[in-house]
Length: 457
Image (tube, rainbow, N blue to C red; front, side, top):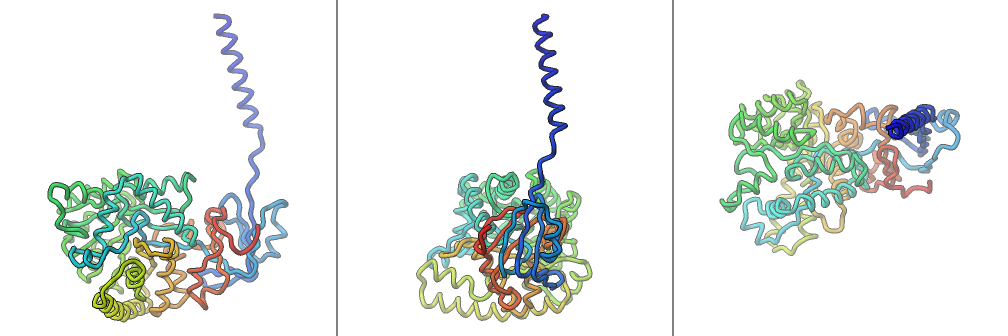
């Protein structure tokens, strides 16, 4: 007994000594980095600081100023990254993407014989993948997005039950590289959306892996609660014309009770109006929006999230790089591209004039031969400029505007003190040449360099 008492006394003394040492030990020194560049463009104001310096401490921006102003205050021994004459921007935000989906265009005969034939075969293959395999695919695509400058993305469905949540958590824990993710889990849909006429013996389990189907207001509330159980960041609803106003109202009400924003996929004027009336936070796509609806959205502060995925013949380019097609199919695609371009030009110009809040997302889910996922995503945003949107507005749509739509304007979307040190740099001037967005050469997320092709550190 005495030996045990002595042992406990020794252990207690040792614990006290270690605790005292830990309390007296000096705190770890802050990791401080100075990033220098020829120019810093603030998309929100349009102001340019030249030359520019950004002081970063422990992953957050501490000060933004001229190099002369910062160098006098910077601590000795800090890490310096000199980007030469490059232009610095905030980290890019893709507010509508699908990182756990990589759809390959099927053969022309398969497209023609199936409902939603371009999309459904790839979607079904993704659904039948093992969840672990699908998340690993998402990890690859997330890394490719980050390397192209997307430091934050909002993943709006097509991720299995909780694949994007798992990927988000792995990235946040530092296990895999990737952008910050706002995860939506499963899309809320009505029956017969996206896929139809599956084998009756298998249909329900297949659909449940990808969607939460709703047929009445109580099911709508329950679907939100199911996604909440998996710790999603946002609720995504596909509002075709067969979802009812009471169902949409129940979704938005329940989501807001859970402090979650609601993003509504809506194309037709009737589905857009239903989302507006229910108080949705953003309308995704919105191609059929009317001028009167834009006015109401502006008054209510509802965002329109533009998705220029199909603009400038994107799908035809993917098809041509993927499969052999008949002359008639190519001609039909070309006619569709021409009609779509005219409609999208008119839509973009109406939105800019309307004063509605807007952001932009790639809606990328396609395998584009010869391009990484990030390169494919980045190619979509210069298309907004080609449709008539001023360059500065395009940059706002994928930085400061997107940050506000996500509710993260206090963290991302601008290069200013207190925000995460998310930076990208291009060699040229993105205002003069929007294609610079496809040539990002420096990426920093949270103060850590992801990519640097501009200078040695």
